[in-house]
Image 1 (cartoon, helix red, strand yellow):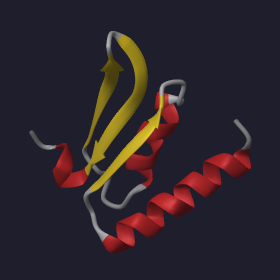
Image 2 (cartoon, rainbow, N blue to C red):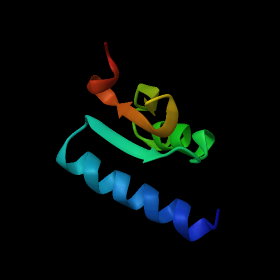
Image 3 (spheres, helix red, strand yellow):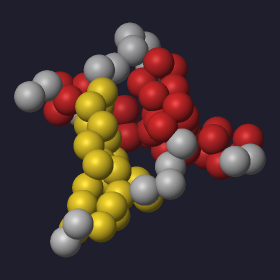
Length: 73
């Protein structure tokens, strides 16, 4: 993945954090989970996160990531 895509995602994530500390993202199934985890580490303070795999009729469709208080179950 290019550096632009990574920095653009982080910019969008930072903009969302200015609105709310609790963020939920639905991402494609082929997303790099290390980059998703990096979003939580780059936050100040680092955010708790939970990653769920989403299946529909037995087929892997995507990933839902919960950051902040929305990550607590």
